[in-house]
Length: 334
Image (cartoon, one colour):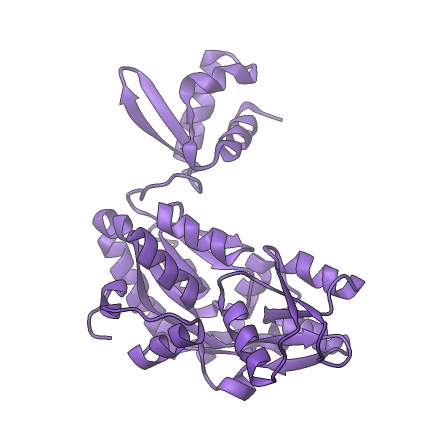
């Protein structure tokens, strides 16, 4: 280990609270070594620090700092194949800006990170962003991102008494409950997961009977012989994830946001032309097998256009009525 590695590890453990520079002296290195390591980490754009008083600094790992950083874009996404257009856009902007792509397992954790400013832009479930934008006022929804692309996988017959796992306050939960209501199934126990990989392992081991999940996990489990119910076959093209922005990021990096969004729209409309690049990026960033990405690529409908009717239908499915819905969106043209 080195001073740089130990400092980064410590700062990551402190999360969005960061650490005083004086705390780092407890890591066992001399003050001069700490100073040299911090200077190197700043040059590598891996940390950010703020002066909080006379010769006193608070320091954060760059992926934990709860505020926007000039000329830096942190894009948060979930571990899914739903974001090829967002990934392409992030990598298109890397030559000009310090762009970082952060992969989360939990929709709640990602949207919370957006709300507190740890990520600047995020692709996470529309319903989760709606709830956070109502509660915290620090984010707004920019556009759509992915539609459909999720479903229910079960072991054996879908019947009363089953235990089914879903991510909480998400499209997965909304569509699962709607699907069960449509089928007249009332005696189903719903449990929640934060990590899709763990949920899949629990399903395969027999701990749970079913799982409401997204691509590429649907394709993975279908290949293993399990029954898959695609929600789009029952409810059409419903919105899954949306693109959201932290409002403080707009104050500091409005030009980056404009470039990102224009390029995001372009890449969405021209995704088929860049499909091979997108597949390569999803394999590289997510760690999925290439064959699985190819098989599941068409599971989502990729579109930035999102209508008021689609949003209202999603809210109705969740049992919510929101007045002045337009205030939750960046554009008033929706």
